[in-house]
Structures are given as C-alpha cells and as structure tokens.
Length: 255
Image (tube, rainbow, N blue to C red):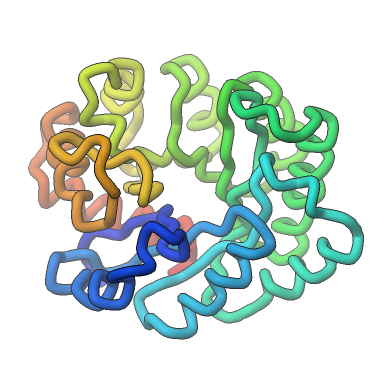
C-alpha cells in the first residue's frame, strides 16, 4: 500500500450522496490507496462503520466532535465504546475543543474530550484531535491526559510555537488544502519547520478544497495539489512526500 493516503475525510457527508460509490471506487486509479473516514457524531460513527464494511480501502474513526458533545451521556458513550471496537476502526476521533462555533459549554467540551481520550487509552487506539480557536486549552488537556497517547492534530491551524509543543511530544500534524491558500502563510511556515515524518495528508472533504478548486467540494482526488505545495515548501520531490506521508499514515493508524 504505497500511494496517497487521505487520513481525514467525511465521505458519509450528504455532499457525496449523488456520486459517492463511483468516486470512491475510482480512487485507486487516481493513486489514492487508502482513506480514513473521520466520524464527528454518533450518527457519523454509525455511517462510517457502514463505509468501512463496503470499501476495502476505507478505514474509520469513532468519536464525537466538540460541537456535538451534547448528545453524549453514559448510555450513548457505552454505545460509542462498542462502535470503536469494530474491525477497521483505527482511531478515536475527531474529538477536542471548538471555541469558534461555541455550540457547547467549554466545561462540557473538556469533559467529553477527556473521557474520549480515556477511551482511546483503554482500546489502545491513536487519537484524531480537533482544535479550533482553543489552542492553549487543547494543548493543556493533551499534556495532562494524553501523554502516553499518539495524537494527530487534524487540520492544524496554529503557528510554529504550538506545532513545536506537539511535535516535541511525539504527535503528528494534519495538513490539507489550506497549505495551498494565499492566506495560508502560517501553515506554510509550520510545514517548513516540521519534519516530514510527522506530517499526515488530509482533505477534511467535502471542506477546504485546495487551490485551484477552493470553494468547491473537496475530495481525495485533489490531494496531489497539497502534495505539490508541500514538495515545494520542503524542497523534496513529490514522490518523496507521497512515500513518507504514506508511511506516516500507516504507522499512525497501524494499517
């Protein structure tokens, strides 16, 4: 399995209702060898479970995004734990803190973030972390409650100083279409700074399509544009970026 691995996608999203099957079956011919579909709610944990059963090259995560933690209680958390034990579920995520949308109380977000980190520890799984406008609180929780876990800080949106904090603790950073944006200078600086062997390619599709598709529906087919941007920033061949990020994804998710 050498090729592009999309480490964070949302193919259960309704944006793919019309052509999901054709799109996914065409991935191999486009050089995309594996996809990790990231859950963000109880519903998407269930639909991710269906995707991984249908497509041999699709893996999944189980978890509840900070915007959706209002649906968690002891009963639904017990269901989530069982869902996370299923075959081809390779991480707990995406979980974390989101102070941008602020849909849930911060103390509730923190509580369920920590509970889901504990679940990852119990099941021996890595963690996909969502952090938006919550830099210090996320880092503090990762420091205090995930020191023995491996995390992917998905769609990394902070600066070099914060990147250093995570990289020094052995975590990975998820990089996608934003690295191609004109206003993506901060992420470009992070990519320049970080070692290539800690970078995970991702789309977060259907969101965050790279240039020249910015504003359109994103898909794993557009990852070569992200690869080219990283190649340029790092001064290494495209083939090297694909090879190293593929190895990173396999190592992180134990594929």
